[in-house]
Length: 267
Ligand code: SF4
Ligand code: FES
Image (cartoon, rainbow, N blue to C red):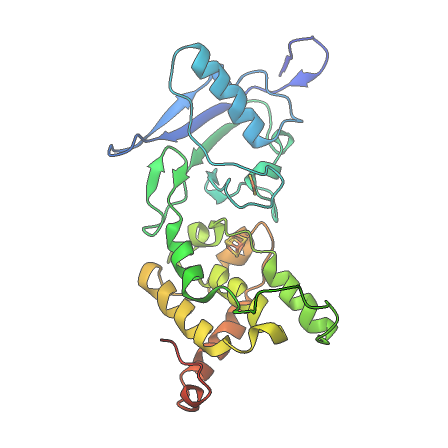
């Protein structure tokens, strides 16, 4: 433990082991000791990386590349493995909302990108999550007429359905569920994106077409679910695996022949 620049607040010294990988090259863990000294426990994990990067730049070295945008747990871009856990040791928390007070003076911290075949590493801690975009393109939307927004209360929605749809809509698309799953399955992400539409009246017209298209696309890129439940544990928004059960139920229903007559089979 040491004092920070103004000599008042205690700070911690940590040793960072960070995955460094340039595009087109093999990656390796690189250890940073001096660069990660004098860290305030009140800093977020990303602010700690900012400090390390400032020190690397001052030495003329390449800063650590990591993704971030909102830094408020909303955008889902900041995912990384911290000591083997997706988003680090604090449950229900995205990396950007994790604080250094969760660590102790002298800790060794291992930081790696998501590990999944569908998420290739672009540079250092940044992975390509376009496979999620392919799932969303397959049906993660509703078709609605343009024009003035309809009155919000025009369609009565049971509170339970609205609450469940809201819980599913909390998914920020970060990919921690895939990274934490031993099969690199994307069931929790896909189920959340499906059910926030499928549970609402506005989502009914394309419900079965959407379910079949998104699940089939998911299976092109990701592994299969064997119900380990690691996804729910790693999810910063605590999305429930119950949504996977809803998705599986809708997928079975989507196979019924009479869905074709209702115009809801996948193209
Ligand atoms: S389900 Fe959770 S862990 Fe998976 S992408 Fe959505 S927010 Fe991230
Ligand atoms: S930076 Fe947006 S969720 Fe972390």
